[in-house]
Amino acid sequence: MKRLLPRLLPRIMGILACAVFMLNTADAAPSKSAEEMATGQKCVKCHMDETPGLVSEWKKSAHAGKDVDCLDCHKAQAGEKGAYLHHKVTIHTIVTPKDCAACHEKEVAQQQRSHHAKAGDILNSLDNLMGEVIGGPQAVNAGCRQCHGSNVEVDAKGMPTPLTWPNTGIGRHNLDGSRGSCSSCHARHRFSAAQARQPDTCGRCHLGPDHPQKEIYEESKHGILFKSFEKEMNMESKHWVVGRDYSAAPTCATCHMGATREQAVTHDVGERISWTLRPAVSSKLNMVRLESGDEFDQPANQPLPKIGDEVKGSKVKSILTWEQRRDKMKDVCSACHTDRQVLGHYKQFDDVVDLYNDKFAKPLSSMMGELVKGGYITAAPFDDKIEWTWWEIWHHQGRRARHGAAMMGPDYTWWNGIYVVAQDTYFKWIPEMREVVRKKDGNEKFADELLAKYFKPIDGHDWYFNGLSKDAIEKVRKGYEERYGKGALK
Image (tube, rainbow, N blue to C red; front, side, top):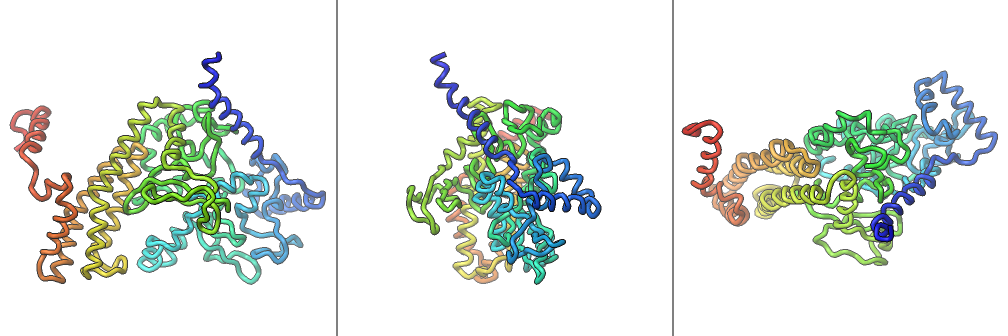
């Protein structure tokens, strides 16, 4: 027993920490006066006639069981932005994370510093520029902002405007300064934890040509297992500890947020992510947390501040290195997999990201910069065809390849990923690059120089310059003939 104790102690402490966490963050109803309770009951009675479906959902919620009613979430102070008088009671329509923090303080603190809360920053990105200018603001309003979030606005009466409401974007900019919407994942008015654990909940936003996480998950072994054994997932469990309360499959919530034997549940969805797979070139990320409650990612190739340093208007409170973030994710994996399996997965994942970075993204990015510097294309985005091609190489195909490798989706890693990256590089981007150079110079000399500088030193591009080697062709021929017979490959 003495020998076992050191090995068991971390898990025992983890289970105790998880239990304490659940006790501390249970849906504790705020204390209310008799008048507030009576007013809340009037809200329920009236809305039972006006919006019966809404009340029916609320009655099935944990909130209803703890006497948390309409007024508890919607009450506001007179003069508060977005507040208005409703049947002699001051309320606001839009419930924000700050409202939820009255009972769920720890969860909201984690959410407010997270990647999700910053999703509304897309309003200042190239994605938004493309949507607003090239597509149109109407498409952005009903499309991009419904996932990323909008800047909420109210009219003279304190009512939200139809251009900015309804909106449950995960990074919505709220009137009270908070960001996001808890109901983006915990849909109104049941606010179910079980529903938020469903892959379909994450798939509301994480799908499509540039970030097909839901489709990759469904293709993966994990997604197949979930679909086969969903009834065994124990989704209603209060603690929902992987490997203990369920073992059939992980969901998105399991890996990025869920409790393990050694970690409590978290609403900081980025703290277990060691690579960024979003930008043109991936990098490993350290996480810097500030005393202000905010946090930011610092690429691993950049100097890290020290604890106590002044950064971004606050002091550094703690740092999670990319290795520590990865260890957190590995801990989730270890509920079902051996160390060898986990290390093998990360080796394969890292290799794909490095291949994408080194063979395609870095040299292409450098050449795009040279084209701008040389005046072959403008610095303005999307006004040259080659910029669209480069955009789709990294923003669509490159992301799919990287996410496919991260989530064990082989088709997305290759056919929807690296294969299309290569095809578009060799047979779209390079011809377009030659064309813009020829258009300005009257020849392709500068294009040849760029390819010689950035592509030729990379072994993986040798076939482009010199053709497939005899050894490579013979290898293919041998394999083909073993399967289909001698002379099958002409």
